[in-house]
Image 1 (tube, rainbow, N blue to C red):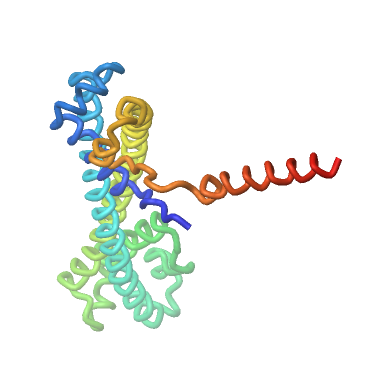
Image 2 (image 1 turned 45 degrees about the horizontal axis):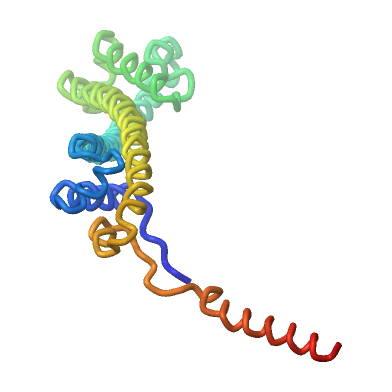
Length: 246
């Protein structure tokens, strides 16, 4: 079974580049396809579509890479923020186990939220009130949570918040670039499809030029074509035998 050429976007762009570049660089090809409306100007329209699709593809690759980086960063900073929250929470719940009011002020009277927005809000509440409430701050200072430590721990919450925003922006940019790439590649593919139909007609007597454009030319007959003469001969023989018996 014949293998089909790769059909991914890089492969499509590569085939389009061969088709268009070689058409523009070969005056003989232009003389044939020009008779069917594909003048140099029209070929350059295809070149412009190719350049646009290539540029959008490069943008999409960059946007996809940025998305992966942002996602990895978000995951690492989430862990650091959760560790900061849970470490303070574990110690504070022991220190204030009989002080429900302080636990409520710190937001530790309920489970740690699991959503991004909920966790960020809870983290800010925790470290803001841990820093502003003198009674809480004094009690927790004995366990190492001085002003500097509290500032460092809150910074982890804020870093995670920034990472969430960056990831959202990267996701949006990646989605936009995907849509732009799909649109640009389709426009190029439509142009290439139309040109190839014409090129096959214009260059049907010039297979070497079709090959130069990356358009495969069947050099051998198919199996049914090869068997056709034998089948025709067998049919004639059968008819002849039938007529002789009559």
